[in-house]
Image (cartoon, rainbow, N blue to C red; front, side):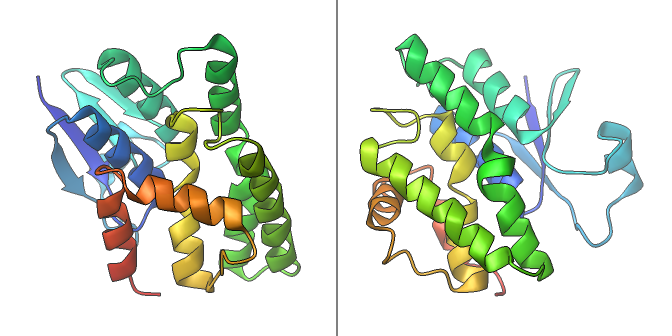
Length: 195
């Protein structure tokens, strides 16, 4: 069995897939996609022409949240969802709500939309409050929820100069994540990206 990831280094959605693959210790082949000139074959794999796309044998999946869930179920060790059903539900809810709770504000700021910085600040304040109550997004253990949210934070720091000093719980969470061998390479990658 061979796993192929259609990937773009700068894409935070691809980072989600890379982190889960690393957490599971899975070997895979990378097909690098130039997002400025997407090849025609990508549209055959995902009609939207978006990455990541993961192939394993005859299975072809797009959408990072689905890829994360698939890898966690297909390769159950180590588990990336909490044992407690309530925390598993919170993890899935955090992944489900990412776009409305952080993603849309992040991309509005990337586009230079009016009021976007304030919207991102509100999103970060809500994330800060959540992490003040628990060490990880879904509760007491690291999960797919943390992986789903993490890639945007170092990019916000790199691209927009976001300072996490006013958000000590976020800063602490990022420090905990940075110690994970699957996360550390993503931090190195982001630091090498053009701002």
